[in-house]
Length: 478
Image (cartoon, rainbow, N blue to C red; front, side, top):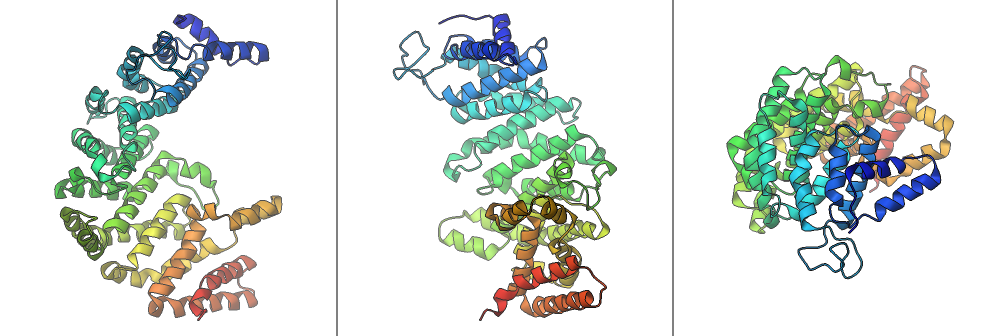
């Protein structure tokens, strides 16, 4: 194998960024020729993590590392490799085990010292390595993570790195069946108590203006989402632990909005949604929506138990959720949604999660009792304005009518569109609770049409009423 020192490798990475095409091609060829060389991975890793390397070069190196790990990490498995350990029998790159071990040993500290240019790539590297090697060859990673979860949050960047690493581990188990999720339950036992303490402290003492702390809260909520996506794992089935995390999730959603995150309805939606403060609320709402759909109805969970799909302690969990948390979170979501009536912009995906939660609440007696008095204010003051043709619609229609039509009929837009979710909620209200909603919605539409004829509302108001009325057409099809 051809050896290469860190300085020469750094020069090659610098050349790969050159605007001179021959120079850039030569550097890329030199780098690709080293893929299977012994010592290449640790050397590349050292360049990325060096404080003396320019950020752009470190970023290029992190991208190379991510691509190498994604393509080649799974090969080898201790087999005898022909050709000095560079290629396998099919001519594919295989990393020597000692090189892999060096990367595994240093990946967490590299992540902890990373910057904005390299952090995302290193997270992907860790995720891919953990997919193949955790827990068999990465037993020390959980200890590193738990050691960095400082309850006092004296080093926020290091705590963020620990939560990033924890999320990478949790993400690998998000879609795995119950019988293959035992390792992540052990990880939760070792890390989630400290993680909960950190989030509690951030919520208690920070006013929401620190993006690093907001990012820690968001990542903590994402860890929770990954572990409950399929079902609630044994660690969280403990009543005390589950209640603590529900309280944390409630606090994240109920957290007062700081002045830096306040925005009017006509503000740029993308920039608001990208704020870690709002992203944390959106993930927390997503968690609650998932739990409500899975555990909101104890009778459904009991039926699954009979069919062998749920364990008995999950029925107890469903009763706890139904009796203690369903109404509490519904009242919170209605309170958050009322902010739109006061002119506050809420991110689209947060609205979608909240509308979906309210839709699920229609089917249960205890949540419907809370929702019933608020139904028509919700429809007329929150949902209906979202159905009206607004300034952003007009801008898109004026600049690109074809794109406007494409978006209007794009099925993929339906999953993230608050307008589609609002329309679906109105339709479900009138289908599942027609006595309380159907006639009232029709009367409201008639009022909007009359107001347009009288000149007291504009065409956008009539457009929203027609949109709403059209969604109710299915109820008169028979």
